[in-house]
Structure formats: structure tokens, C-alpha cells
Length: 545
Image 1 (cartoon, rainbow, N blue to C red):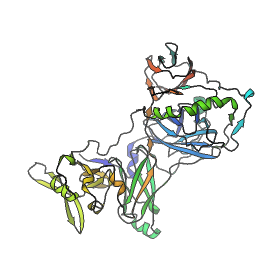
Image 2: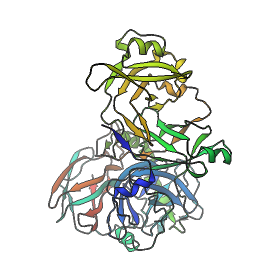
Image 3: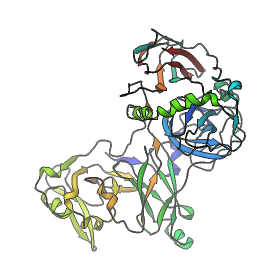
Image 4: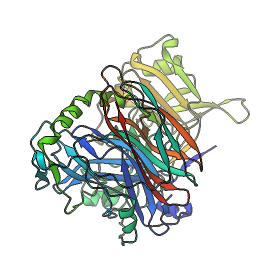
């Protein structure tokens, strides 16, 4: 059965999705960080007219911005209006308050007064956001910020007194409706938090008008915009109808995309969201030139942000947070991956896999194919090598050779087999053969072959001038940290984070947690939406003794 990846903008309206202005509310695991920390976030993308979750866009863009400019960016996938991910604050970020802005490609200007504000302290540098820090004497420092009042939708409590290093239980009882929310449990130290900007501020700004951009709506995933460099305008015009370009990713044979050149050498690649930071191989398959990927972020100006209060009273808490950096690295390895948008290319898996070490090995690729992989053969046509796939006919009586096979090495599209001629075939480990016919960008392939090497040998290939290998910031993986204990000294300031917890009406749940080795005050924050679209915020503080 054929699989079709639609890459033509003229067909997009057939998807039948009603367009609405999208605005995004962001909740985070904490409100205060040190440079080098990760920000774990949960996104609620709303249709501004209905004030309900939007099923329109499949990806969003986040920027961590001070009055001096953007210091970090991230892409977060969206499924029916909800998204989650985490990204790291650079170690070089100056001390100050930052606004966390989230938007979609179609509505990049949807920055609300209710946008999240977080504080970042750099414990290794004296650099500060220009005009963004106010020094407060220790005697005048207020300390902990007052908590936003709870809405009373959820009931949260501990079942026993949390003791250092021991397991305790957190009980949560649901309200009258099904609820979708983020849940964070973190230490509330003496650093102080920026003033709260919650659902009330967000909803107050929902009706403010936002102009749509000229970009296409990202229904199925990120649309990667690229330009063809190294050609004159006249050459670009002559190639606009015939040139084909490919994007492929090392170690990921499902992340293969084909685009066609449009006006002024612009290329569009319609993806299903490429997850994680990757190396992409970009090739202009016909016509020459090379691909240059365009930056999708907006780098907006955010105006005035409240000043961060810096005081000697914060010293002890900041020292403790710096000491906890090793614990945070351990937490990175204890995450639980949440459901995400799945790749649709080659979803049935390989029709047949050859693990070559199970056979007598040969020094050349052609010998390996002739002697081991009976479903493949190499033929020379018009002085060029072509790979053919040998398959049974409809009734299984004879073999049929199919050409125009999509050939990959470690998930990277190889359009010229001569690149593989000189490689040591002993570097090959597996050969995956896919029988299915696929269509990419209007081009039909009669099957797929992926040669898998030891240690990603594809990175060592000497590609021609029309191929570029580029670092690509993909969509963040949606993850949760469910309180798994760490090894050794336990300095955790984050005890739990779930960006997409769901509870039915009247449901009760008990979370087993392990308290850290040190004492302190911890805060539970749950914020989200009910099934009817009503926002709620709940807070509960407890002591670890």
C-alpha cells in the first residue's frame, strides 16, 4: 500500500482545519534558575476566539528573552494544543529576569503581557542584564515571594510528615471535571521569585489583535525554510521547475524529506517534526548549488521587564543550588519520555534485515550485495551505477527488478552510489530493506534500502560540493521526571515534574516520593485547564524535616 507525504501547499486546505489566532500559555517546573540549569515547560496553545485548546499548529517556538535580547531558543511539538519539553539555559547568560515567549509560525507576534517571567542567576560571572538588576541590602530583602492564591479545584496534601531521605506520599483529589495540567514539586528557598503572571493575565490579553505572518501554517509539523546558495539569479530561475533537494538525518531513516525550489531559490521542507538536535545532510540533487537553512525564530523586543532583586541574603541558597548541579545532571538520565507525534515514513519497519556478521564477509560493497543480499543488485546504466530491488511478481512466479530505489547510508540519502564504491565493506553492519513504495515531494520510490555502518561511518564520507552537513535544532522531546531517587548525595531542588498530567472528575491519586537528604520548604504547583476550558492554579507548601 502506498504511503503519501503531501508536500504541495495547494492541498493543505483539504485538511479541513478551522484557523484561529493562536496564543500560548507556558508553565514551568520552577520560577528561579541558575545559568546552566534546564527549564522544563508545559504549553497550552489556545484558540483566542474560542478560548479552547487549538488543534491547528503542530509545533511552537520558545525564546528566553531579556531587555538585552534572546539568550536561548527551543521548539516544542504540539498535539491538540498541548506540548512539553526542556531546554538548557546557557552558562554565559547574565543575571536578570527573563520573559519566556511562545508562539506559532502563523502567529509569531502573539506575545502576551501574561507571558511567563523567570529569574536567572549566574553564579560564575558578574555579568548582569543591562539595567535589569536591583541590589537590595540584606536587612531590606523580603525573601520568598508571596504565592498566588489557589482556585480550589484540586485538593493536595501529604499523607505523612516528609522526613529527610525517606519516602512519603502526596495525595491529589480531582475536581468536578476532567483536568489536564502540569504538576511541579520544587524547593522554595530564600532567593525569592518574580511576581506571578498566571491565567488571569493571559486571558485578559487573549482578545488583543494579532496579525498573521506570511508563513504557511504548520499543520503536520515544522516547515523548514531554506535557500539555495552558490548560484546566480538567472540560474535559480532556470532551476525553479526542475531542481529537487533532500534533507536527511544521520541515524534516522524516517526523517527524510524532499522539497522543490520555488521563487528566488526558496525551498520548503514539510516535516512531521524532527525531534532532538541532529546533523542534517542537505543536498541539491539536481541543478547544483547548496542548501542554507533559514532561522525560524523571531528574536523579538520585549520592552520593560521587572528588575531582579540581588541581595547578600541569597548567598546561601545560590551556593546550595550550584552544588546541586551534579544532581540535576543525574535527573536528566531519569526522565520518562511522553507520547509525541510519530514518524509516518517506513512505519512498518524493514521488510528484511541482513546482519552481515552472520555471513562470510567480503571487502567491497558490490561483493557483499552479490554474495549475501539477494534482493539487491547493482547495474550500470548510462555510465552510472544504479541500485535495483529484486522482488517477486504479483503471483510469485518470477523475480522483477525495480529501479529508482531510495538509497541511504545510516539514514542519509545517497543519490550517487559512487560515494560508496571506495568504502571498506567491513564497516557495514546491517542492511535494512523496505519493500513499500513511497512518495516524497511528488517523487515515487519503488523501495528503500538503508545501509547501516559501525559508528556512523557516513559522517566520514567526502561529500560533493552540492551537499552540506549542518547542525539542526530539532523539536524537544516531551519528558517528565517522576521523582526517581538519585545516587549519592541527594541535593535535589526539583522533586517531581509532569507536564501533562490528566485526572478524571473526582479521581484521586497518590504519588510516592522520596524526600531529599536536606531539610527545607517545598512547593507543589498544579496549573492547567478543565475539560470545559476553565483555567485553574493550585499551590501547596510542605516542610521536609
